[in-house]
Length: 447
Image (cartoon, rainbow, N blue to C red; front, side):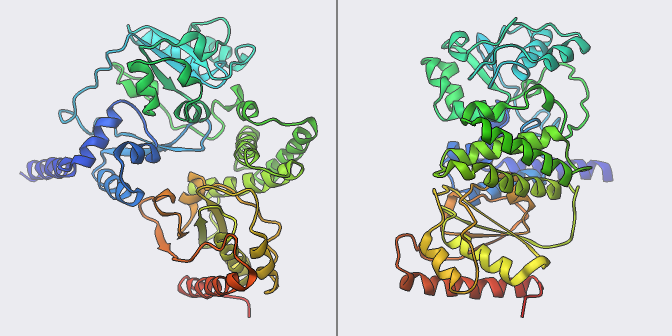
C-alpha cells in the first residue's frame, strides 16, 4: 500500500509540474534535443529569473538534467532526464529527409557522430564543418577503428557544400552551435524546415534522438575526446606567431599550476576559448596573451570548484554589470582590497566593453586601489556556477540566473561618460555595500 501511495504521489507531482504552459513548452522543446537556458529564454520570451523558477521546479521532480558540453565544457545545456517521462511525453517525430552533424572542422566529432548514427538509424546521415580542416584528425580515425565504426567521408567538407534545405542540422560542438545560432554558415543552407529548425537553435546529440537500446555510458572527464581537436578556437581568432608562443608559455604555467586537477588538453581548450572571447573586442592586441591567461585561470579555478576538485572554503562573489567596465570593476576592487585572501571575487559583463572606464580607474586610485590592470570580460557558466553570491548591477534579464544561488541586485546608475565628481558618490555607495556584504558573509576585513 505504501508503494502504491508513493507511486501515485510521484505521478501527481510530475503532472503538477507539467500543468503550466511554460513548463510544458520547455518539455516540448527538449524532446527535439538539448538546449541552453538562454536559448529557451529566447524561444519562450520570458525573463531569466522566471525561466530559472520553471527549470527549478522541473529539476526538483527529476524531469530534466543539466550538463556541460562534453568536450568544450564552456556551456551548460538542458536535456530530458532518462526514462523520467515514460508515457507522459510522446516520442518526437522529426520527419526529416537527412540528418547532418556539424562541428567546426568536420575532422572528429561530427565524423564520429555520423558514423554512430549510420549504425543505429535508417535515416540518412552526413557531416560537415563550419570551417573544415584539411584532413580528418588521426585521433578520430583511431577512435573509429577501436569501436568498429566506418567514417562516412574521406575528408572534411564545408557545411554549404553538404547541407540542403530539408536537412536537420545537429551541432556537436559549442563553437559551431554558437556560429549557426548567430546566422553564420547556417544562412547558406537556404530556406526550408531544416534550416528553420537550426535557426531556432535546436541542439541535440545522437542519444537525444532516443535510438533503440542505447549502450550505457560512463561519465565524461575533462580530457576525454579533447585530443582530437585541441585548437578549434584558433579558427575564430587571428593569432600571430608571437601570440601563439605566448599562449604556449601560458599553457605551461597553467599546466604546472593545475597539475593533478586538469590535463594539458583542458588547459589548451580553456586558453583558446578565452582568447576567442577576448579577441573580438580587444583594442590592444599586444596584451591579449596576458589577459587570456588571467581569464583562463579564473575559468579553470571556477570549473575546479564546480566539480569539487578544489575546495578551499572561501566564499566566492561574482559582480556583474553590462559592460564590466565601471560598476562591477569598482565593486571587485573594493572587495579584493577589503577581503584580501579571506574571500574570492570575480567580475563579468553581459556585453563587455573595450576597456575599463578611465574615470572609474581615476576615482578608485584616489582610494589607493589600482584597477587599471583589469579588463572587461564576459561571464561564463562555470564562473556563475562557482559563485556563492552573484551581485548584479543593471544587466537585467541578460544576467545569468541559476537555481540555488544567492542573488542581489544593486541598483546603481551607470557612470559611463560621467565626470569624476559624478562618479565619486557611486564609488562610495559601492564600497558601503561591499563592506556590508562582507559582514553578512562573516569575512574579516582589513583594518
